[in-house]
Length: 99
Image 1 (tube, helix red, strand yellow):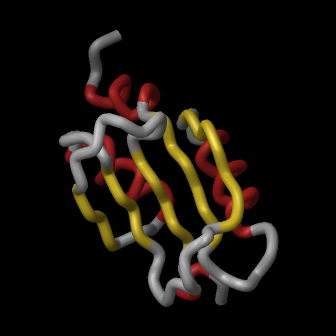
Image 2 (cartoon, helix red, strand yellow):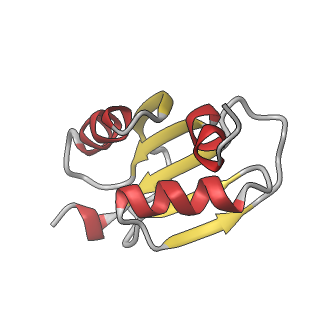
């Protein structure tokens, strides 16, 4: 199938919990997998605690990134082209989703 949604299904997504609240990455993973998305990895962020949740899109796929943002309720999307990594989209969960 060659619909715009097929590109979203093929995105490899990594989710990191950037808060002190346990289980947020797993909860988001379950939610995105139910939507048919491909979450290849999830865990705890090594970065300092984040105030706001962000999506870092590592390939120039505006449609895919905005679709994931829409499904997850995340407003901050950054595009950083980097094809050396296994995942296409990195989500770092911040305090805004911990409340």
